[in-house]
Image (cartoon, protein in one colour):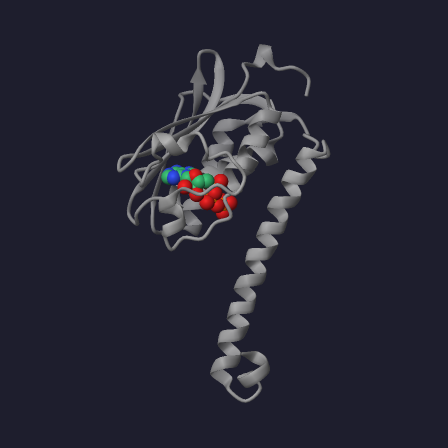
Length: 204
Ligand code: ATP
Ligand code: MG
């Protein structure tokens, strides 16, 4: 469009530049995700282990999400005391953002997204709960596969690469943790990351 008409038509010029900007943002995103996974595959994603205050991390992500996204209601439910663990705080935060972005993307405007940090059976956890479309049980087994997107996700207007959860899983695996998905179509989903109990943490 730029080549043929853009030089003379201001409207075409504006639209073309907008399309180029969107497309390059999308490609930058995709390349970053692919690089992360490729580095993971070849053992070149190193974790920087430090003390992490999970309560603070979850509350930071909740506040930043509420600021960026006014279409959903964000709230946090926490334990009475602060939850502390060890891990790579930047990566754990990245995983949390992936879950929160999904929660927003796969739910309706006005829906509530609830973040939690707590202890379960002596182990620290954080979780993200939404009231969105949910994931069918036949699809839950596939969501961590690279490039997998459910039928409803592919049919929706929301774009996506299908790599978010693969990255989150890499991060949680690297910490020796597990991800639990509890989901019911039409009711919503709760994704929980359980990290190893402090005394079980090997030196990563
Ligand atoms: P992106 O790589 O841009 O995040 P994506 O969101 O499609 O793309 P993933 O985050 O890996 O990819 O999620 C994989 C699929 O799992 C989604 O396409 C969607 O079908 C399903 N899914 C993930 N989170 C939720 C959720 N909270 N509610 C409903 N479906 C979900
Ligand atoms: Mg996603």
